[in-house]
Image 1 (cartoon, rainbow, N blue to C red):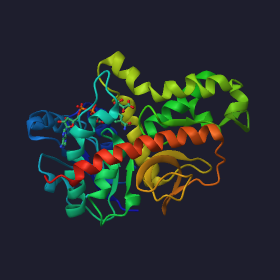
Image 2: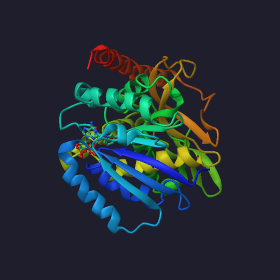
Image 3: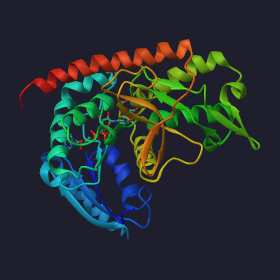
Image 4: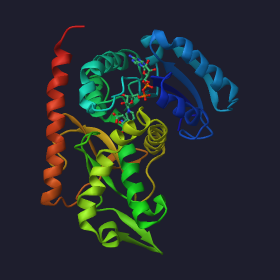
Length: 335
Ligand SMILES: NC(=O)C1=CN([C@@H]2O[C@H](COP(=O)(O)OP(=O)(O)OC[C@H]3O[C@@H](n4cnc5c(N)ncnc54)[C@H](O)[C@@H]3O)[C@@H](O)[C@H]2O)C=CC1
Ligand SMILES: O=C(O)CCC(=O)C(=O)O
């Protein structure tokens, strides 16, 4: 494993980045033995604020942090990077759906997809966070045809963590006792948080979550809608979208992608669908359960999908197909 990494974070003067950068720079994501060069990209207007973030990172006196580059220059930002954490995008406000951001944010991911194609290492691993995350990720992947589609992922780990926490709270157990929840589909209110295959540790035994919860009405009702609408609930309360929990989820996603998932566990990631898993259409970024090792991720296969799940999985795929149609219109427009 390499002992030096070049990590780009976009939207670096924004609120998620403010909660994220310390953990990356401190070695909590890529390990304490790796020195990290951080590249911080934000738009020109934000350079003064970004300068302040640099001052603070310097003042943290972190031994792992080899170099910090703050820039609004896309070529400088994307050159030779190992990881691209694409956060920079407009967040939604109260009353909006995430897909309402597509028009504003598609051009960012078109430009950054091209920059990945032209300047990044071909092995670069890309995590798209900016909303609508799945479709922005598809846009970036489409604009970077020489980079493997497997290297493009979007963040659904926040939804995964939310699902886990809801079950743990309900059962009054630690979140670490709950394993193998799944988020299927879009990072939107159509996502399907699925605990049919999840387990909870009771003593030495891992028991199926539905058997321990013993409340199918809750699992098929309020549990699902709470996870689906959690982002909106946070916006309503904070008048700002989630940042601390988003940053934590980004760290979890990157750490698992870099080091692998724990034995016997899977996680949820928005990944490229080639059309051969769980009836998900080809050429979508769709969240699925994956296990990760030194060879990359593999989709957990063979999980039984019941009729109710099928309907939910198709509904979120249909929303992604609609978003893709919109996105392709933006891609066909000249710059
Ligand atoms: N997938 C997920 O689970 C989550 C996604 N999000 C999304 O992440 C995005 C960022 O959220 P926040 O940090 O709260 O927003 P923010 O508004 O605090 O920060 C966004 C930053 O991106 C910058 N930016 C805009 N265009 C850029 C470009 N072309 N290149 C580089 N930087 C650019 C802005 O100047 C700003 O500093 C939003 O789209 C939000 O909806 C937020 C939480 C969870
Ligand atoms: O909900 C949003 O639009 C922004 C934040 C987000 O994606 C989330 O909290 O899940």
